Image (cartoon, helix red, strand yellow):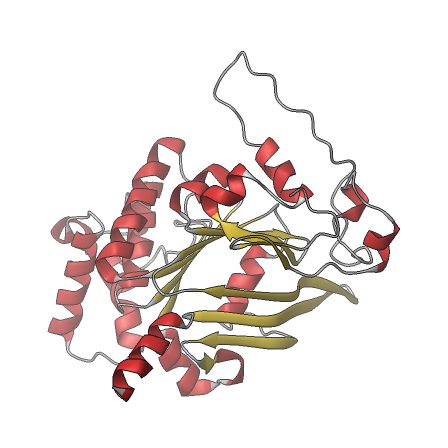
Length: 327
């Protein structure tokens, strides 16, 4: 009975829990506030979409989860283990369960190495010494992502298209059978005709390997197609978090509404909606006081300049960091 309760509790706890994460770095003697006091949870088997403009801190957050970028403060709890407190061998062992798919598939592959060696490298680093086991694992994962191992393993990256290179990158990320995969804009560098194939592949791999995904993108249409929940980020802070369909139907934060208005409609007779926001995004070196979106928000007032809005529930399952939410 006690064991059953423990298993139920483990299943209900989030696989990834980020608590008050702060990431800053120096540029030219000044401090860039890349991620500021971000907290979020990702449940087992869930896909969380993380969206926002370029430079808002999405990729920095993803790299901080992997400890590729050290945080100034805060915690990253993966399956109950604090990654920010791990170092050396302990962190390397934990990283086997957390993998990353990079934004540029071609640039992330070593042009001098053959595909078989590239996909097998995580196995070598993790200590799988048997060459037959490595070879079989590489062949299995390449076949799983839709590539013929016999035609692929001895070729070089420049012999493949962008979509094929992304399949190879996905295979490299999955060869260790991870629990959690960070997809850092995995389709932004691909042609539109190839994007659907890669998105369908990610969905298939998620079901096949039982993955949990953090899907980072700036294309909201893509995020809506693959995500269970969506988190919206602006200038290093989370603006809104909620179920995908609910957030797209009734956005609570003015910035989320602005992003949704920017989605192009494939109809020449439909005129684009004029933006209600004004000006350009502020610099992360000197972010505004209070709400960071207030300098562009038509609903901003003195309270928005004086107080930092905290994420609070505005609808079942939906939270927004806004003093004057839309719902």
